[in-house]
Amino acid sequence: MPLTRLRRPWQYAALLMAFIIGVVLFGYLNKGSAATEVSATQLSQHAESFQVQALEPPPATTKAPPGAIALPPETPVDIVLDWFPGPQHAALIVAEGLGLFRQRGLTVQLSTPADPDVPPKLVAASRATLAITDQPTLHRLVDEGKPLVRVATLVELPMAALIARKSTGINSSLSLIDHRVGYSRQTSYSVLMRAILQKEGLNLSHVEARDVHFGVIPEMTEKRIDAVIDGQRFGLPRQLADLGVATQVIPVERLGIPIHDGLILVANRNHYAVQRDAIRRLVSALGEADRWILDHPNQAWDMLVEREPSINTAANAEAWPHIRSRLSLSPGAVDMARYRRMERFLWEQDIIGTQTPLDQLAVDPG
Image (cartoon, rainbow, N blue to C red; front, side, top):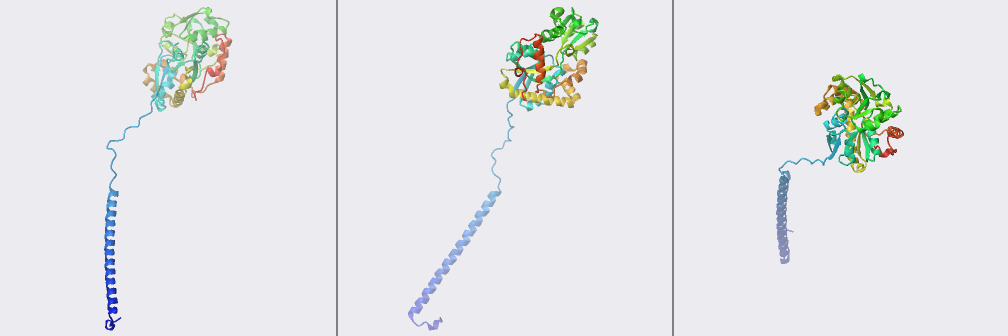
């Protein structure tokens, strides 16, 4: 409306009121805009602060390097050998050399007996975890009431033989009559010698038996005995030959003794349930060691003589291929028919009084 036409007072009042309202609205809008600008500026500053903080590395919790992870405790297993360390103990020595026992959480301690008859008796008396012996000894001791059980086979064919000086003319069981026959273990006398004589209708009174203990070589070289029933059919003849003594070797299986395990590990049957897991791990290591020996025979020999220098002899080197071929590739497996035949044979020969159930003679830890 043009100002020239405002003639009445209320028109001026309305115009003034409109002007005031416009001023108020303009001021309010400017204030809101400024507030908006401030809020935007503050938000921008907060955002920049957040971005800077996000780029900073997180505080370190420690300045020291992390420590090594502790290994679980190892299970100790002590094994008493049947004789001085030799090629026949290759699986044990190689398994230790390759670290196979440690990989399975075992600490294995090998010891040599003062008496070759002692090892299984120490296990029966709970003074050792395991011992090395042969299958005929196991049958004899179990029949005597010893709580022993076979848990592994190291050598799966007989190791014993009748070894006689050639000059004596001994070449059979019958030709042993009135001769001096040595033995180093009780089983050689009360089981093997007795059995091969009885197969020919003879008995122990027909020979002069002598306990030579560990002194087989001097007894033979000095002619204090004419023959010996011994478990070293592969090493002893060469040892005697190097000393000028020619021998005749007759394996015990050719004299009527059933095929049997030549070298086994026995445990205490009363403790077997508790020890089974450790024994299973040990047997697993022995199987792996035997397979490695089969694939690396020369390296295995080098390891044997490095870890046990006493093994490094001409006799043992000559015996090594023969013994190696008899090592058990599945040491835990049991040939139950073999144990049944031996048990029945000894019972029929009246060498044992009763036939023991097979599950009390031999088990497979696996």
